[in-house]
Image (cartoon, rainbow, N blue to C red; front, side):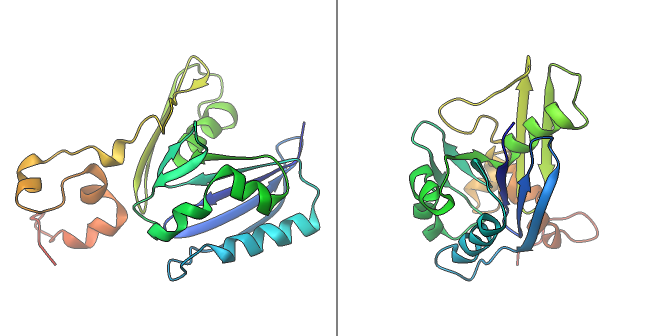
Length: 194
């Protein structure tokens, strides 16, 4: 087994861990996601510090958005600054980490983690849904993550209210149900515009 640098970059929090050969966590760091920066330099600094303390053989970066798995790049992440997409390619990240690096959708990573190490261990089929800054989902069928050329199960971006779309109001699962949407609901349950 190898020692892996694992990153979970979310819209609100950034978490970095060094995971040892027995799936033990050798080191970890967590900070708020720096939405105010044009580029994720703070993350690259954390990665550099971890690399200085540990010898790693691979890295994986989980991102809250649509990943083009064939091209190895972030296509779109609604909860990150749009300027960050250029920094999230496997080539750029391999230069920063110094080791082979993979990109993955964060919910895909969580689904695989639960299937192999968590609540889904022992089951062939696992569905995982997260509701946080965004809404994401991942599916493991017959022990394998469902992922095609792009992130497989983009539940958060499913349009559920076409009338609202025509009226210019929030329409997707994520716009209506993720954490940032909650303050827009009145106690009566009626939609209120800000």
